[in-house]
Length: 415
Image 1 (tube, rainbow, N blue to C red):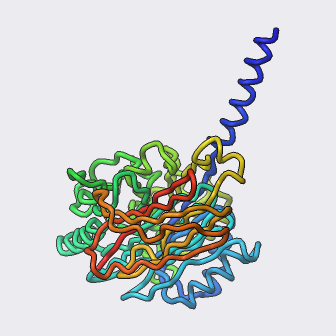
Image 2 (image 1 turned 135 degrees about the vertical axis):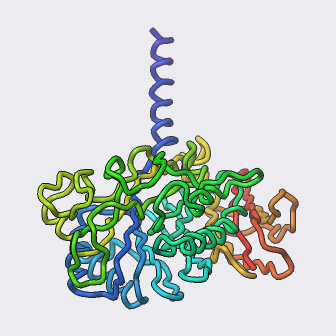
Image 3 (image 1 turned 60 degrees about the vertical axis):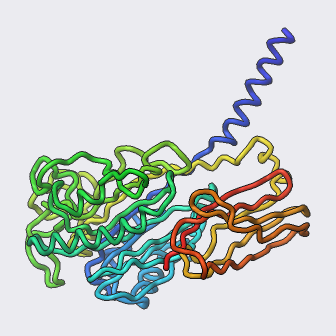
């Protein structure tokens, strides 16, 4: 009897620890081409209906025209029903239309907006930290060149090559996604092939959750079409013809596809509001079995694109069983800011107890560049500014050790 009780007690403790160690948070990430959004009241009325119904944790948008428009979207759409729930990342005004990010500040914190310049529109890398897991994700927002001529295809390829020049520098396992309006028509287009191209020595490629060979404008792919929501013009400059193109989607890095701290949940990528029954038709043609009629109407009038969404699970377990006692965790190491950077960046950390602290930086192959902090510190919040002026572009790592605990994060220098 005693042995059974001990075994039962051990099982209960395992279940308790297991629930703490392997708890998960699910986040909905959405991308939406807003169709030349400048803060129009008519668009706000439609966007607030569809966004409030979808309730994304992160919303990346394309075709936003100004910082003022971003602020209007934040106040009149994102936070209209529950003030203060969403925040917006830093806006960068590039050539032509721009991208922006909104996020629930209870789940994510914003780190940086890094533009990748192309001959047309910027590709923006939005870096966020998932608060519960402290894991960093990078969301690339794209709006590639439109139209289907050979010259347009080559320009899209050049834009993707600029992106791959960045992602190819990431270490194995880095968690990033790309989303937006790709304007790609088929699986053999050079830009799409390049996005998925696996190369020896790096993990800068992307994984498409769906295998859709050939031309995407066909009935068999109707459930993945995102453009156009209308069959005729409604006077806002949007495309017509009904749903028949897969322009909007989300691709994942290998680090997000494999089991890890952040994992794409298979089967969850889909155009919001598309029930698969509106090929070459308007999204609000009754019936729409995916969303209520009022939401189908809001999608119809809001933009000529449907938003696309996917679900991701974030492991929120601590680093070890001893971490279950919060008093045993001696520090919090934050993601450097800005990241990527040129040539300086700030590394912040918080000590919960006094102890001997070291901060070291390593290059991409693990060689130590220097030990920049090596002394006893009292509890509190600290900052270290690293000037990498004399170093070349690439991935670097910083490691903080305090007592028996250590943590390492990556950062990227772009010159």
